[in-house]
Amino acid sequence: MKFVERNYGGRIFRPRPKIEFDANQGYLFICTSWGAPSGSDRVISAIRDYFLSVRSDHESTSPFDRLTCLSSLANDLRISVKLANDIIYSEENRAEYQSGFELFSLVHENGEVCWAQIGLPSVFLDRPNSALLPLSSSTDLATEFSQPMQSLPPLPGKLLGVESSTDFETRSFRIQKGESLLLVSRSFLPAEIFNLSYGSRNIDEVSKLCSQNDPNLPFWTGTLSF
Image 1 (tube, rainbow, N blue to C red):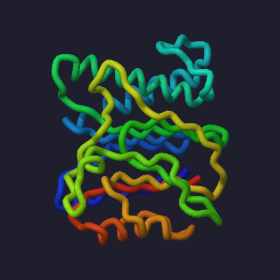
Image 2 (image 1 turned 180 degrees about the vertical axis):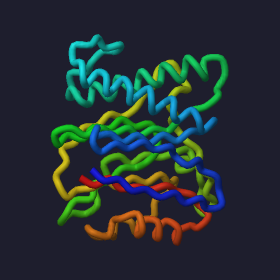
Image 3 (image 1 turned 45 degrees about the horizontal axis):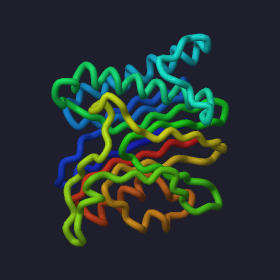
């Protein structure tokens, strides 16, 4: 796996995500803190530590039910994220909201890619001889409440750690060599992204399209290649 990323500030605030990537261990964690930036480290460490522990000890007892509709890898990731939600809610947000987090957590093992996601980024599959395929098109509150010609600043719609329970998407996908995932955190995606051909769906071209579409609007983008 190879990962590259870029952040564009624009003139409107959007927090820069904290990223932890390990090609050897096969994981990528992208955590955007809407609160104290240091909280992202706590979220990532909670997910990483439990996930690596349970993958090395398949006989360990799970703190949550395992879903029969998910693979073993996807279940371990899902449980890791649920555990992180419990930790953040209990330690930071039980009495009053201190911080919340958009999260994209991905693991890769034996050709299987699994991710658990709360909020942005949107996820697209960049496959040879194929159009760009949306795998997860997330939105935020700015997307929902903006009016034509009057775009609101970025505002997350779903966050980790702000409630005792959490609802997030867990996906599993078989990835092939030569394929990539394009990740974009932006309230409004320019339609021209879907006109890009294989080989040009990189952070340079995506950043160019987004900044030309609206230079005021901040965004983050990254590509994960297999």
